[in-house]
Length: 154
Image (cartoon, rainbow, N blue to C red; front, top):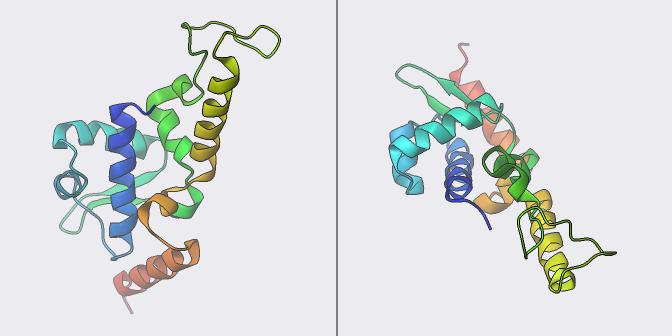
């Protein structure tokens, strides 16, 4: 149900969440390799994610990309909506834009409604942390604070 671009974005942002736990920014070329996304394609994705406020980018020797927020605070729907728009909420199975309602259902309405609800609930309830294997937001915050403390001058 996800577009290729959304899939790539989720792979990359999940990798950034894991990398952020190690305390440093990640270069786009390294991120592309680790997430198995073509680097030119990824650069456009990263620009979109940065403009949406999900990533920060820094230049220089220790530059690269970092998550702007705790991965536990970023639901998948927020990322997918950037790239898939209205496709996040699939329409009727039998036709573009067909108004399929409980009052005027198509033949697949009941079964498709369950699929749509499951898909939407998944995107709304799962976070970048949950797909990255990060156990809790507090662990991420502790790692972020540790990284910040290491980078500050005494």
